[in-house]
Length: 384
Ligand code: GAF
Image (cartoon, rainbow, N blue to C red; front, side, top):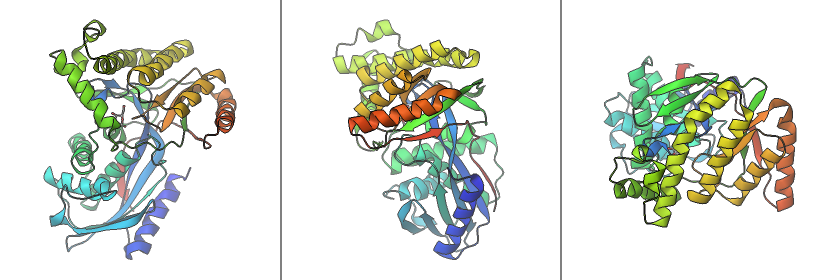
């Protein structure tokens, strides 16, 4: 993984090479791995993500002519436009950068012309929230060029602008977990977010001799390809059939009265998954490896069988991690590919990664990628 100083240097040098511009600020926002609480955010539920040390860095400088130019080390095509022409019509990758400048403007934040260059260490398409890290780093840089000191209200505005850019510009009707943790995470902890009350709190992680290991199956996941939106619709259908505001208000007994088999199974995942979040917080705090294992196994089975968002590579990685000594493992993020998260005794990390590598080779899958998720801090900007 590239270190923060390398990423900052690459971003500022990228700005100079692409546009001949000297950066005045650098915005930064992390990717995330969710420990538990999957697809529960848009059901007014609970989630428990951790910010990754992997992050997007956005070097920027203001312009006085209203022109916006944005390039990225990860994208072949730069975006060029004028601040007055920003809108929901922005397409492709630019939706996550120029799109967020538009939604910031729409919410009344000052956004003027600027040059920007992004560099990221968040693996793309791995279900580790590279999009939200791009959105939030862009927003941080845009605040930075105007010298706006971060406060809680501004942080909430950034979260809202990112969610709106995803749903209205990128057409990904996501739930808000990724932007919330990208902005509000605190180093060393997980963020327990309640999407019913809108509250979040930092949960210090007493991992001791345990490591949060992330394995990217390299099966690319996309939130815009229909599967995510379909799950969201089915959950809304379940809540409507039960006459409830959201599935947060449902219990498992009510869920079993749903007559449509698919809708019932989707709801069962959501209701059982929400109920696993607080016990996971407790198990992580007390270091109860058996309980972590039980909760992660139930979560993964629920996503595989009821929510149907797993793929064979995720199932194989999860089973192999547990066989090789992980306390618990489950797929993480939106699904249909992407990554698993395991809680692993630190002295077993090497054997777990090598067992997964071997199992993937034997099954003829592409080699997976592994990273250690040391919980990092949320988004910020600093002078270049
Ligand atoms: C994606 C979405 F962006 C989140 O809002 C969340 O629903 C997640 O999938 C699943 O938990 O990351």
